[in-house]
Image (cartoon, rainbow, N blue to C red; front, side, top):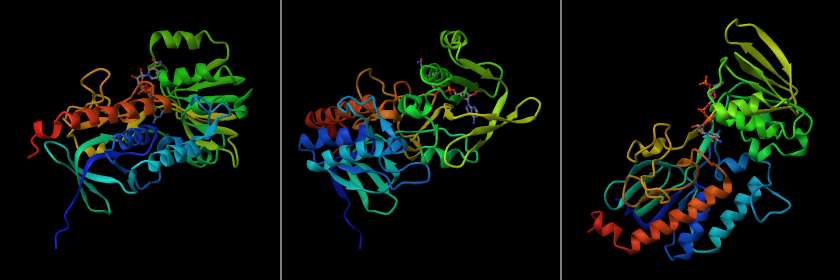
Length: 329
Ligand code: NAP
């Protein structure tokens, strides 16, 4: 017997600040949104990148700070307080052109939707070397977000390594120089990829030094990081280096694989939004919010803001006959 698929007005895919904010707005617009929050994997859990963040001190409204998981619990609870339903599963297949949109989850039934908000975020790219994941998850001084974690008292006066050679690495190094005793940028080549102006700012900063042509092969330390094992990319020579912190800044990977090329992406893999200050994607009725489309700000508060925008854009599209114009009978 074939089960009839449930038909939704708005399905939101994701569970970070963008997704829950979109849910709050869509629920309060009486759209009864369905959130597919993800099932969790080794590198991502429902709640997104904030679940790996200890103290969030830059989200307005929390003068004493809040932990990332607490904050995501609160966002989720606020969405559930209104008429939001949640499926804890991954979307594994989509058909997003025309009407209705069709989504398939890993374990559950097929879902039909008039509109879809993609808020699946991005994963920080990690080095994948021994010690890194363990010390990042235990709060042992390893992080992929200097803006999130760098101001913690733990890093004050420490020797902190920043890995990478792009704008993010240089921005993180400059930021960490405010708190750390010394900042060592470890880059796999002898030239930075970062913009000239940011490079110059780092070269002019007395606290920032560079280790060129080096890759990290292991993060050392039991409870907290004590140092790094390095390998020279030119000579192959191995060395160790004492450090009390490490920030990995080698880019992010937006979570767009499940879209299977149906929505237009930018050259760097983030979702393209054709109209500035609108969250519409290249497909009518499909909207994007948060880090999956934002390769620039990548903050919880900016993600939440675009989640609000996506819900308002979806609501207006539905109210103005979007599905009918897009082929719904
Ligand atoms: P990015 O430009 O892709 O740079 C990544 C860096 O990490 C590169 O230097 C790369 O080395 C290195 N890298 C990549 N994989 C590595 C690995 N496995 N091991 C060691 N090193 C590795 O990424 P991003 O710095 O995050 O910047 C992303 C975008 O956001 C850029 O367009 C950037 O301009 C923008 N952004 C702008 C600002 C700003 O203007 N304030 C701040 C942050 C980001 P190679 O150089 O050898 O490839």
